[in-house]
Length: 240
Length: 293
Image (cartoon, rainbow over all chains, first blue to last red; front, top):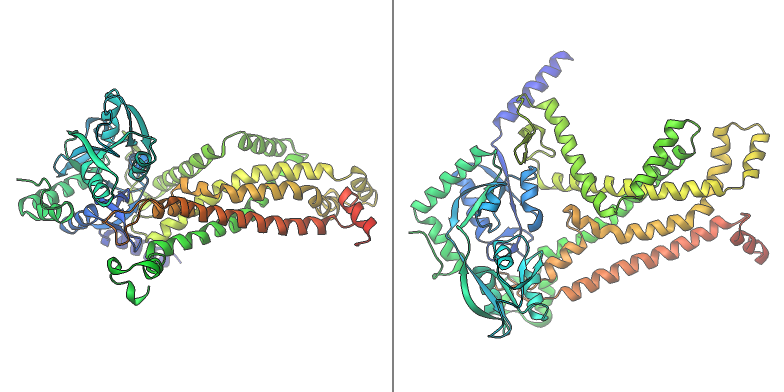
């Protein structure tokens, strides 16, 4: 019996050592073209492809996990998954809670959409997704802010007249506007963030360094730029 | 699913719809109806068991057990369901991980590091290396526990009331025949209490059915999650672009819940009718007079 126990323990220990580290990648899955759930029910989009490539380069085993946007940081911090790749802009407020890798997407502009030109963007009602950099921006302007849990509902609010305009990431809004026959971009674009990075726990320095190195490598050999162009079009901002 | 679905962009009308309704995500949507039914099938008996335990504890002659029963029912009933559903799974998850951390990790690094709750890889529950279905089942188990604890407390109160409603004379007669308290409970009290408990329990069952969308709060992909996800406007990033169709999806969910409650009502009515037979209650008396029994 004792021998059996010993053998089992030894087996468990070696099995544990042999395993490559599995990294659970958290994402929202409702923010096309960054990340979304495709018809097969899998996470897809720019961040899926980039994340898989980063994991391959850093020699990590990765699986994808969906999580609602509003609880995406708390669930990272409580270790339900290990990274956030969900078009999360790097800013000071978030840096107080989690750590970021370097940016994998240059600072992107944010835009207003509305049903017609000439809406009052300074004093009207603006719909945003809750907890985004766009929401913090609107909170500082004189406009009345309406917050929604996902970007879909922001458009729904603009369409049914609940809000005068919606405010969000330009690249996310663009396909919605191009596909529709009622929505238009209005007003000036606003630059808000320091780029988009991978969020990791502050205590997880090792993982952050691995991902950082992989991002640097992808920036250097130009594969990151290719990936950006593939998903955001040839006009998209890329790295020098 | 069908062979003609390989290029959705050239399809229209019925062909498009038949392909659209059989995509992988729609299959997950249909499967999620099963998830809801499964939750009900597992939770209802467990909650009833919790309720029975709570009611028996509340009637106990041993003071600490009685206090426990009373505290359980009044505390859980006094907290909003949603708060409880948010609290129990997180508390359980972190509690279990902390225990495993103490037992399995050889590092003495603290579990809380700044903002982070970190346990070593072998103490994770479920392990990061586990396949996705293990994570799903784990989340579902936490949900079942949360639901059972909450609905158990309500059931305990209903059953306690039902036990009090059984005529004292019946129990006294049993005691006079020399039955032990245990025998009185098993032979007289429990068989008779159901007729008093059922209206309350049927009410609870209805509330339980209607509470299942709270699964969505626990990160389980139930029908409400999928209705919102699939109904939302889809851009050309997707193979099947469409405008905002949430209205239709939520309508389907609404019909499902109405059907569920309608069927339940039919079934429960029959059960109540049966259990009233021969009881000294108004319903039982009416049956006797009508000569049904």
